[in-house]
Image 1: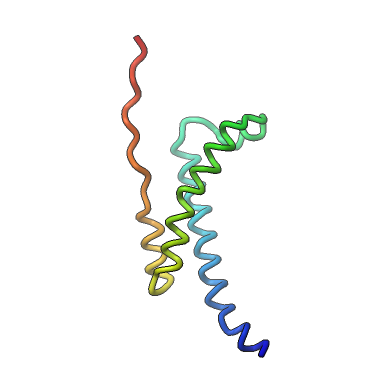
Image 2: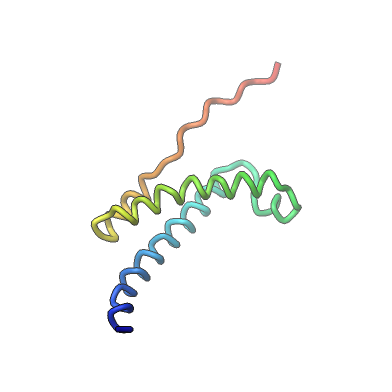
Length: 96
């Protein structure tokens, strides 16, 4: 009975590590692209930076969860995780 329960463990670990790699890659790219240092702002107790980073991460993770749930294999999951893009931001309005 326990062996039947553990039969899905390798697949779970593969998808878990895949999701973890996708999240780390997203955080690496996100913190390099944004003009400010989120982790420094969070260490300086800026709640806006923590909320922005957390919600951005949530916006990335939700499609990754869907990709994991609906993918045929791990490669398919990685492809869908990689093509998840943010909508382009409008250009900043110049100050008068």
